[in-house]
Amino acid sequence: MRLDVYPDPPAAALGAAARIAEAARDAIAKRGLFTFAASGGRTPWLMLEALASEDVPWGGFHLLQVDERDAPDGDPDRNWTHIAARFLSHVPLCASQLHPMPVMDGDLSAAAARCGRALADLCGEPPVIDLVHLGLGADGHTASLVPGDAVLEVRDANVAACGPYQGRRRLTLTFPALDRAREILWLVTGAEKAPMLGRLLAGDPSIPAGRVRAERARIIADRAASQLRLDP
Image (cartoon, rainbow, N blue to C red; front, top):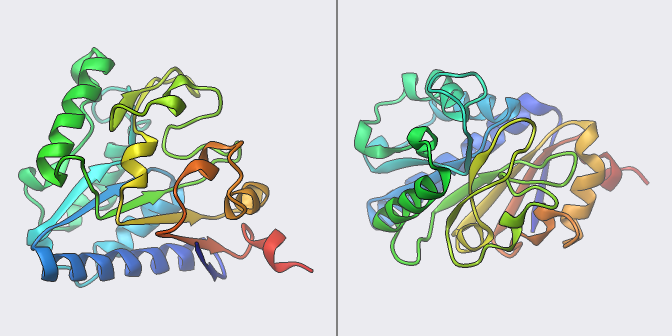
């Protein structure tokens, strides 16, 4: 697992955007298609804004979600609301290139199954996403794979419904879907993330993030999140 450290969150966001753009150009040149799954979070919104200004052959770019909250369309709790405002309004993607998680379907279990089928249609069977962007919670969660949730043990589905977390149920990619990705890009900022970043780098399986396959992973972090690694 590679660790790249930047001075602050904006610089880390720019570094992450540059890496996504580079991966997109390479995948589209080789296969004509790039599939990118985005997570939520404040620094990722900066990352997506920066990505919109990168040199990307957008005709082959497909946007997916790592996870999504069960909230009304346009609600600020929805990751897609922020993706639309910060990214989609600035890039020439058409509807067929956008793959939001269908949390508005009502039955989240049925929505997870439908989302899994759509993922296979786009990314093959079993699905292989080109690049998955992940964040790291102060409790060690990533995606909506949170400590103690039964979704942590799902092995027979690529998308699953979670129990309530911070007041919302969610859909999330599962460990099998994450582990097949060609690349995992972690974006971790803030001093409150430093203890969990150390555990992620150590591959600590007692936290959900530590159970994600590390061989094809890169962490982009700011100095505050990396302080436990940098301080003597």
